[in-house]
Image 1: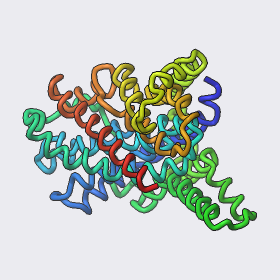
Image 2: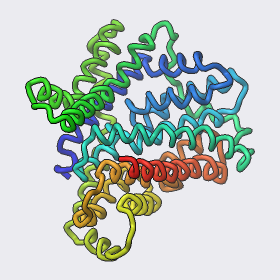
Image 3: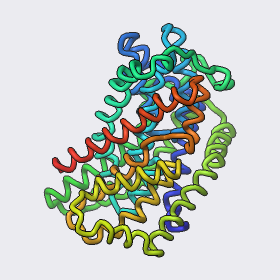
Length: 396
């Protein structure tokens, strides 16, 4: 448990604080409303996907869900369309960031378990995530309207959303500052990784400049710098008292306590699988079977996700089963194995997943409608993600 939570807990804690500051200052609201306004009514789904993707990078799935749902419902009411038309693109974007992109729990812990570079996982993850979210968010919505038309006639349960914070747009940070704050961890990690890759390819001497870049590209340091930027842009610059900034950070840190326990428990369970020989036994079952490690990681993660419900625990547990198999497999791309595990852990969210019931309640669905919208969409996203990862494997 200690090995799993080591520096991972720092990344989660700082990430949660950054997301809370962005939400409390109205930065996330500014990003969503500006993009929706710029794209217009005809391309509203594209605006929702882009806004949700940007907000989803900075916030955990449940936080982004609660934050964006009131915006989605108000826009749907204004445009006289049903909420699920915007809900599926939003959910697809939030789920794809949750499954593929650090600093979210699953990808971060899996990358650490496989000893993959978080920066490379992030770069590959964004490349895979973009077509995946377009297919599962935009094109699937059109198909799903024919599969379950009754779901696209529901007005949703607005009362279940409670009293959401909705401040006047002119009182929120500017769009540029909000985007910069939300994307800053991604900018730092991607920049440091790309520069390091160029240095390795060109063989340049690692001088002081490269050492500084490596230091800044460390995930802990990148998240700390990003949080300090958020304290200024989403707090001090907005004339929010330091006491309120501290309260936001404190409440964010307190809110991830249960998540850390789940991740720590998942890490301990993973080690039990490794030390108990379960991983080696499964590896022996597949001995001589000609199957890609990427597909194998996806299958195991998918099975565990369906059985356990929690995507994060499924992903962490998969690492314990896959690591023994990687020992005898030369030339494996660990970043793609990480993404395949994340993709498998996103599949088929059903009754043993809390998200299933949250979405059922908010959108006012019955069980069948929830299965044919949310569960089906998460399955499509998982399969499309795997296909994109396999294509990436052919290229890199």
